[in-house]
Length: 213
View (cartoon, one colour):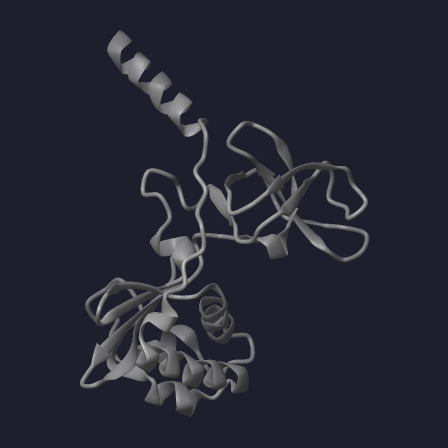
């Protein structure tokens, strides 16, 4: 019993310990053919062009964890590309913004905040500061005192997003050393966002999987 309690205390102490940084990765330029593919994908996303996206998508595209979650029909059911309220285009735009990591010669992944997030940390409980020199403020206001400046830090989520008087939104967070404050939501990314896989298949790059939790 005592050993179990000690193990629990050690686990809790580890969970509250220092948090690593997660630096951005974009290896798109390593392959000119993939770079050309992302250019076409960006055009399709900007125009919300479902037909263009279909041409860039694998016939066996994966959209969920189950064996039957494959193919364009299932993809449309899951992501609803023609629905005005769909999350599809925003999710793809986020990937294009954050960049792509090359895992194998014929495989790119995006975004790095999901695929490179430390396995020992809870993705639900953390956010990633996805920029350099993001101010951590004492309160959710542009006029609030800056407590620290964060660059690519992983921070713990500390509550619900707060809307300020100037219509900006702030996320309450806690840093690895226990400092609490607020960061602009535009400066952080959740590692729970949609994740994509892109394969080189039959002499062309395709969107092979797009999933979310």
